[in-house]
Image (cartoon, rainbow, N blue to C red; front, side, top):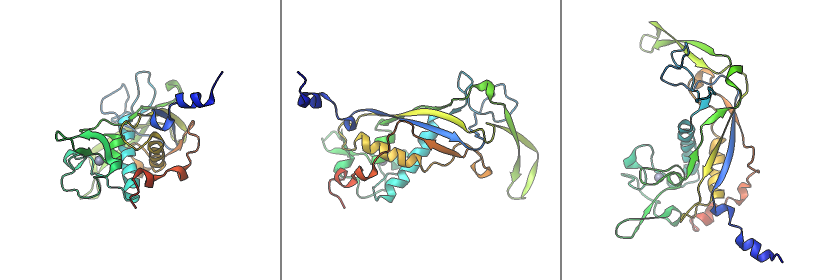
Length: 255
Ligand SMILES: [Zn+2]
């Protein structure tokens, strides 16, 4: 006979285990995520593609942008946050930064040789620092449209001399972008690892990541010239109830 109590006991708490967060970026305008090397394109700065020729938004770029947005949110919620990307000013060193980091929510079980805790802020717990691996692993976002359906678009530009406020001679260049207004979909996943000894659980991690993603309105180069504007879809995230996002209990009753 199946005992309900036993079933419940054998189910791991999803907020203490790993979870995936599927994300889709829908590019409203042309996207320009450049690669340095040549890829058989005529452009000086060709767009990034994977081995199958599909357009790609690299994981590293998304991670950098998302860390920045999550830092802003955490600061707005008056959480102490270290100063990336300079290693000396990041956790656990935090040269020149004071106050607030030595709290239970920032204890991830990392210990100094004398046994005292080495604290890591909420952003370092998610995105990592030189002493702590990132808890969130990022996929590249890959375009769902087959490469043969996407025409190569070259966008001419010219280097400006800011001092003379004129165009430089012989400095015409070509950027490759995705076609404008094609509503291209780029899909990928964020993989959130279990909290381990941190009290910052998977649900809270997901909520902060989703909030940060909603603040990213554009990716890639040329945002001021209207490139790379996007919308997000989160296909399998049932609407997170942010009311349940109990920061105070996480902070151990800190005001
Ligand atoms: Zn930190």
